[in-house]
Image 1 (cartoon, rainbow, N blue to C red):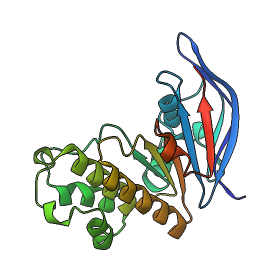
Image 2 (cartoon, helix red, strand yellow; image 1 turned 90 degrees about the vertical axis):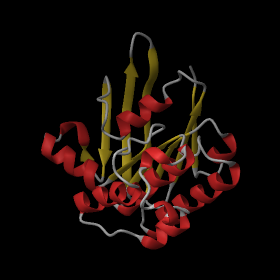
Image 3 (cartoon, helix red, strand yellow; image 1 turned 180 degrees about the horizontal axis):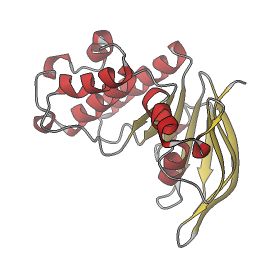
Image 4 (cartoon, one colour; image 1 turned 135 degrees about the horizontal axis):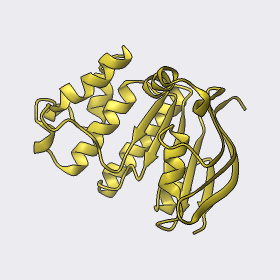
Length: 208
């Protein structure tokens, strides 16, 4: 399996241990779910794998590059071109409208504004709305559109359906899976939803 993400002997702690000596590989067109109770380290593991938090011990490779050995410029390039992160907080620019938020990502990565994707996410009719004036569920879909339009190789998703009703959540997850299949990408998912987790190729549970 050609690895998009490879984790080697990863350990991390704060004032208490979270996880120890984790190793795994995530290849093209594959999905992985991380489950566990609150406080078990799920989001911390995602942040480490997505280059946002340096681990106490171990290595993280994205596309064969040890990300915590890279220069700042090289790491920025990885984040811009290879990684897409869906946070529980959407980090949209509230003073901008929906279209402008999505276009910012496409300009930075020299990618296309995907109108078909926008339509499938059900946000075509709100492109001119300020993101501060739309619902939390709509903001979640705008955040996903912004990420997928820049064509990342790995999608890191932290509770990506938390603000969505079941029907919309199912549609959004289907879009993510179709994206990774079409683009030889991968999904790293953190979720409390076991039904959602069990759709993934690999499921790990962190114990507190």
